[in-house]
Image (tube, rainbow, N blue to C red; front, side, top):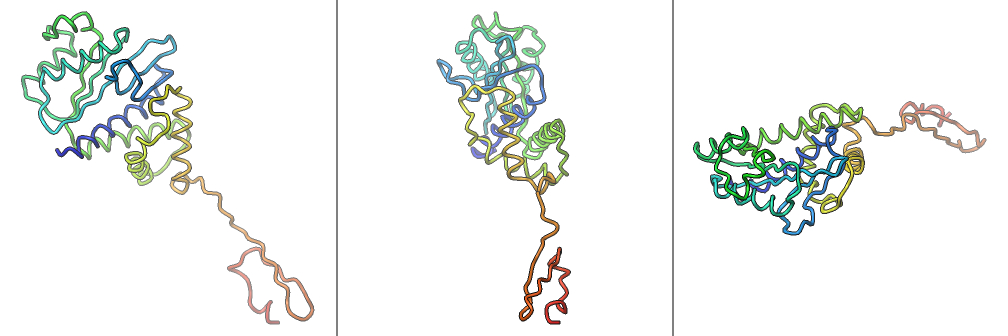
Length: 239
């Protein structure tokens, strides 16, 4: 996996997380790249009670190691110590031993988290995903399709593919990055972008099926009208 692929993996997972959350009732506000004290959080979710979930996404061309995972988790805990959940999403590969460590963490078994993280053991989850462009794209497509369906939009598969491809390049340009936005605001922003750019695929085009044309004939100034320019009979014009 190249450095470019690592960035793309991060974007895929970020999009999938956000779109998935738009049909999830467990949160009210989301901030991407929040301005926390140490800036160690990629996504900060808040529910109606103000409880927070911290998420960090990492992509790498190299195997993830246990010390790296512990360092990233400690950074999140140190940045937002009052969160109810910490999720580390890793896109790449790791050794069998490290994979076993991840399973122990998720099962809240003895995982040698260390003194800093032990008090937060029941709040920590690690998701490990192998970088596979087709798989990640399919993951985003599924979430996009589900979101649009919730909004009573039912595009065909090709349109979902096009929307997903557009999001890959557009998503990081959304104005709400670093801004605490409600679910309603995120929904409105995403819908505005989708419906503005994919009207045809969503069957939202306003088409003028009938066009009235008026033509004056030379001489008697008689007005000949037609409701469809493609059915205009030339003999009406030439007598």
